[in-house]
Image (tube, rainbow, N blue to C red; front, side):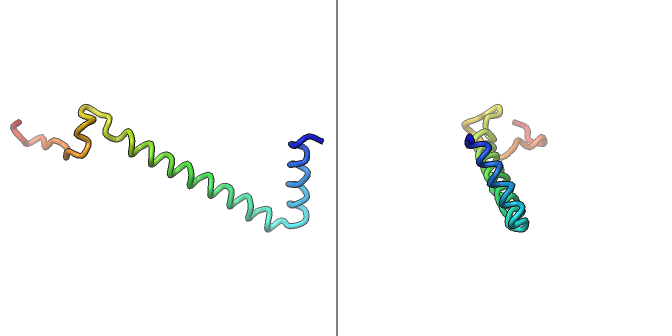
Length: 69
């Protein structure tokens, strides 16, 4: 058997012998994937949020339309 067949066999065996543990494992893995993608997305947003018209002035407050300059 190759590694994929062994993996599928073990997953099926776990699901049959301990269904609550299997569900908990799937939920835990899903939560870790979601959190890692959220953190990665936040980091990418942090890196690219200032790449607009003035990338070196990303901490400057937005322009007030009522200003004369």
